[in-house]
Image (tube, rainbow, N blue to C red):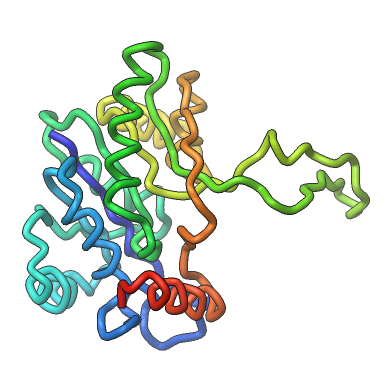
Length: 237
């Protein structure tokens, strides 16, 4: 069994809207609905867990899951104060029969079903070659010069762009290994910047599949504007 966790428990204050960003509409549909469509249509995904803010469970169920007939959604999960707690809440509800779990930001509506499928397929292949590979993430290449700066804002050195990437989601892992990584982080009171960072600190390998810069996370008004333009160009409106 392969599960997906869609994190949509954020408040989205930087978007300067009275509506949580995952529920803002693009072309007549909430951002979250656009995101869920890609996972609903991916043949590799068997079930979906959607994490929403406390108090929005019924709204999400009625206005998104039922309204747009997302039949793969197994459960709506109440999120925590931070993303890591939200994901952990969902992980603990997934059946131990699950082999692989794919975690994705609910406000990245431009991911495709083929990208989701590719991550899952590549993880299985890579793990057969090297058992230490426990995860794979989608990322975008760095296209601007990256500088390492010190506490006084002086440049310490320039980082070669070929050695860095911009981490995105989905981030896909073997379920048992990711659950162990989350349990260890909870025990150590460690908060990571993404799911992969928790797996990395366990000493396991996480590979990167280069994607594209259009897989944006809608955080600011400019992101929302760009997402609308990209959807219009792609005919996804």
